[in-house]
Amino acid sequence: MVFIDGLAEPTNPGTGTYGYVIYRGDKKVEEDCGLAGRNVTNNFAEYRALVMALKSLKSKGWVVDVTIRSDSRLLVGQMSQRWKVKGGGYIQEYKAARDIAAEFPSLAFEWIPRDQNKEADLLSRIAYEKHKAL
Image (cartoon, rainbow, N blue to C red; front, side, top):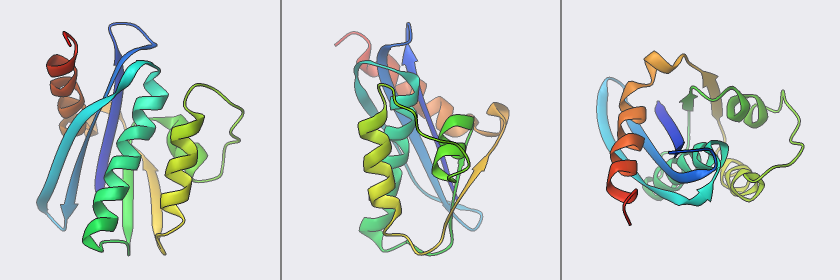
């Protein structure tokens, strides 16, 4: 189970940051956060969170029975192939996510309300505080 989140502050587009948390069963096994980019949209940051989490999972060989949970309806809808991808400033990250996701034999996406994504949200905010002044 992986929880991801991204943000762009103080405006959208703005300084983009991301956070993710990986659980195996009930045990948290990894968390990370970082800079997604400058003058990027929140959707770009959401997709960067996904890319970074998938890269981490892949590096550990954890590619089976993975569920990604996100409070981004756009990301979940597009990655589940229920929504079309029409364009936007996040397309390069979307394509990177689709390429990495294709290497996972069983990958599911679930939308969750923001209040169920507090850990990943907090990590993205911690990353923003670290990178906003740079």
